[in-house]
Length: 295
Image (cartoon, rainbow, N blue to C red; front, side):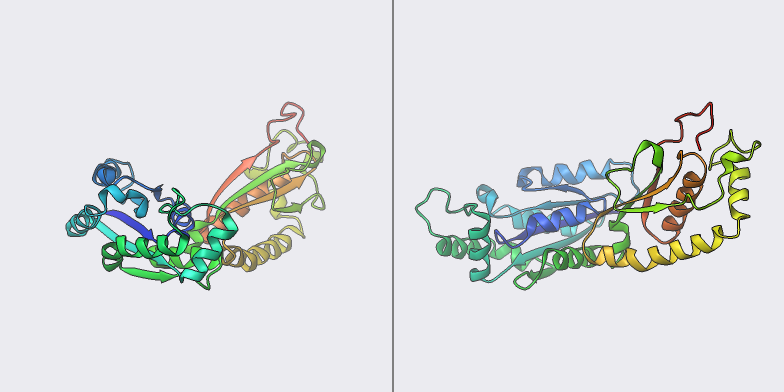
């Protein structure tokens, strides 16, 4: 089954933001897809690797040459039993749209020639998109919505509330002696933990090795620290999602980035995975001084 989302609506109503919101959910997203390429686009999705490929595209007034074709194509997609189709139409009051265009200083697609004013352009646009609006599963007015509100609503409409999947987390381990990662959104210093570097039998190992992990778990402060850290993330992560954040970088540092920070980063990434977030882990300084065993 192919998951397919068609986004349409008035210029300035938030179509680009809606498309990016779906892209954050791993939808293959295309803006202003020519109508002639819609069905080949769906065929391309079907040949992809995922069992349930997901795609999203925008159809709007920019495709004026195919204004009579678009509704028929949408209806054919809806009749296809192998496609789960959702059509979302975005709109707003004329005053809101005019204000947005004034702030962005971009011309309306129907007024670029300069002989059509904004009000007339919006009136004509509503007429041209009336059939597509009638086909929509969800018509959304974005007048009073912030970008975060719209993003959340689009993801709820399409993904059934699985918003945590929209937040990609990278956990980075590093060594303070090599500098702090500039991309870090949150940073945690674990140099207060006893350093395995000073244990001869652990010096040549890393935080990925079971012996180092067992050593750290045996420290009086380690479990308490991890409980507090996981509690903090359990509190802030849903709030980051609610504010529309799509990427978060967590950095964990020790002296050399080889033992303590690596073990903590691995455990944090596993915790985030179990909590429903997409996470990856990167050990920036693990291979530095590998022969000497970084502190």
